[in-house]
Amino acid sequence: MNKPSIYGLTLDQLKEWLLAHGHKPSRALQVWDLLYRKRVTDFSDMNEVNSECVQLLADTFVIQTLTQHIKQEAADGTVKFLFKLQDGSLIETVMMRHKYGLSVCVTTQVGCNIGCSFCASGLLAKSRDLSAGEIVEQIMNVQLHLDQLEKDELVSHIVVMGIGEPFDNFNNLLDFLNVVIDHKGLAIAGRRITVSTSGIVNKIYEFTDAAIPVNLAISLHAPNNELRTRIMKINRAMPIEKLMESLKYYLAKNNRRITIEYILLKDVNDHKEEAEQLAELFSDIKDRLYVNLIPYNPVDEHSQYQRSEQESVLAFYDTLKKNGVNCKIRQEHGTDIDAACGQLRSKQLKKDAQQ
Image (cartoon, rainbow, N blue to C red; front, side, top):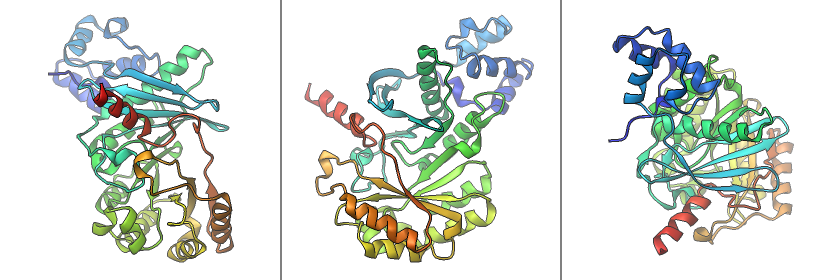
């Protein structure tokens, strides 16, 4: 049986574990510093920690569970990693360079059960959730990649928008967030972290009540139930009316804006009519959100969908702006590599199956 990743423990959990095994909780701070500040990748290098404690940790946990299977680098500095997990599963992680810093998009599940009809991530159903440690380790692997470049660069932003539905892996997601925002470790500010959900309504309420100071994004992609149900089957169980109620609950409890993600699909959801419906949907909360218009990255298996024409994108944007909705057209990254989320993984699994 594989040992769990030590990255999966929050600082408080590590303190409790050490105390339960006869060691001072204060040793957790030493271990934490070595893991996240000095970025030690082998327990044998933890020279500052009591040797008996180090041996106990090594007998119980591992530090590195992911191995780099493929790395793609784009001309704009975007790097896409395909990591292999201990059980042989493959996941994607993406590092993007922005003017404001370095952002990492992490995966939370092996596969996805949401089944959005335009998405490469859901081409294979979910086989399992990632542990909190496996999610944290994606950040650490990207940081180790940056360390090797010797430019003193740090991961500054996180988006939980990779393969899988984060709120379908809720407890591990919360542990991951508590690890990466801890000021004694990676210390990534909550305002620089965004979690995206397709709209699991009950978990939006739980996420709100958990009061973890990070941002929320909603993958909406349609302004009405008929269209959203057609392209996102989750809308059958959790229609837009229920989703909007949960978002208003979130806004009532948080002094934060919500990001609305809207992938533009040619002749599907990119007409002026949909833009006007979207503006109407948000009419009473438009000052508390902004819409992120996303150019579509075509996926071979979803050939019925194409990227919207630039004219349509600009018209959609103008309609929202004229109706007082804050919006922007998302800058594209990694267009010269497998840009769509899940695309690299899907291609590799096909290749492996053919061999």
